[in-house]
Length: 337
Image 1 (cartoon, one colour):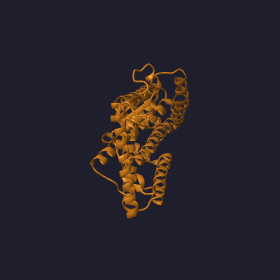
Image 2 (image 1 turned 90 degrees about the horizontal axis):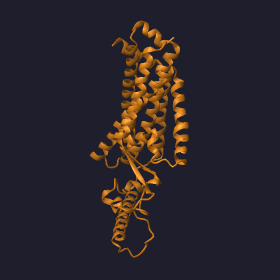
Image 3 (image 1 turned 180 degrees about the vertical axis):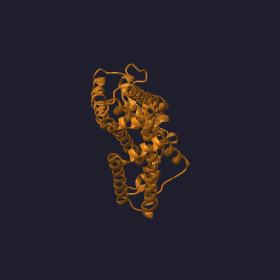
Image 4 (image 1 turned 90 degrees about the vertical axis):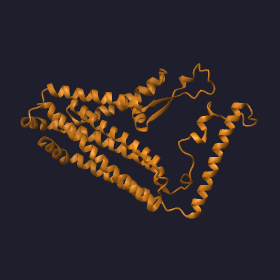
């Protein structure tokens, strides 16, 4: 417990961590202030007009679905050149994730139910960056300055010390992420109640938001561990920053371009960003025109394939776990002076 307390004090005393916390609060304040300034309580006439437009949009969706069914039956007499999906159930209003609602036709009015999930994605992105940078600087600065050597004189067990540092980092980041989430979403809930619309806050909404938040927290912890592991391997904070920049430029940009040139099949599967998006959203759809080459469904082949959350999570865990294990193995044997 003394080692954990000492690591908590070291982590909280780091100026970089304090700076990142200030930037976190500043980003929240700017986002909330911008939202509040651009929203207003809708009048009765605005609500009635928006409800009428939403009803009309839903009728248009139903009409399009009926036209698609008529085309399949061969009874469509006009607009025969209009595109319809090969499976009309894809545009069946009953099977859509959501239908047009009044909030869609109220520009300048903040709706918590409609905007909470996009706002949560912004929060998760910031926390992922926060966790990666804090994790890298936390261990990188100690290795570079000799702080780890001094700590080992007091507790001469390398793996115990490194594991305590990693556990302290993950626990602190998790607590901060939970507190930030409560403050962030609570602020926008108040804005929706006072200067906008709360929207439909039913059980489905909260379960969907909770699922995204839970997956986001896992992603934040993985990013923190990844920054920690790379900085441990490179013995410096800049090693993690350099590795991130190199991966983004060389692989996500360069290799993606090369894979497109050589017509690699399902090239998005080789990108870490694809698996990150699939995990965070539950699944991700990607387009590959090669899937339609020689297909019997032409010209109605859509060329999409899906990556689900479980394979994506396994990829993220394998990469993070592998680098973390390598960091512990190297830390156990190498000279720290």
